[in-house]
Length: 117
Image 1 (tube, helix red, strand yellow):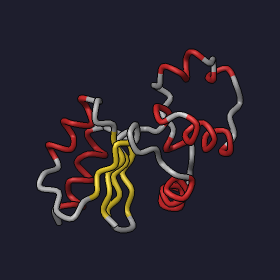
Image 2 (cartoon, one colour):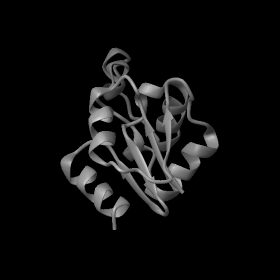
Image 3 (cartoon, helix red, strand yellow):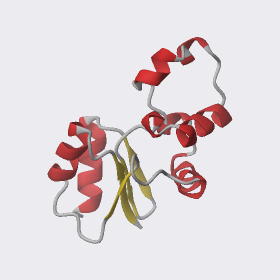
Image 4 (tube, one colour):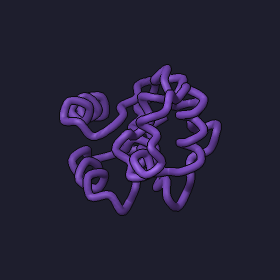
């Protein structure tokens, strides 16, 4: 499977997708217009072994809801991601059995290497 979960309105996601070109046989899913399903999140979890790793602590709602002050469990992270797309750390890039989460240079370079190897 080759897939990228992203937000089309996010300039960082757009830049990364452009940088990863050519994306042969990739499916791009805009998580705002096509929300992630429980099954899709389960698949991401099976590759990352952590809902927290998939969770964005930079989301505005994270601060607005004072979630930093709470002890969040893996189930909490899962529920929040399914409830609101902004809680998914973006982009999430899946290349066969590898997952690349987020937009750090190191992660993007590793994804690029996996895509074009």
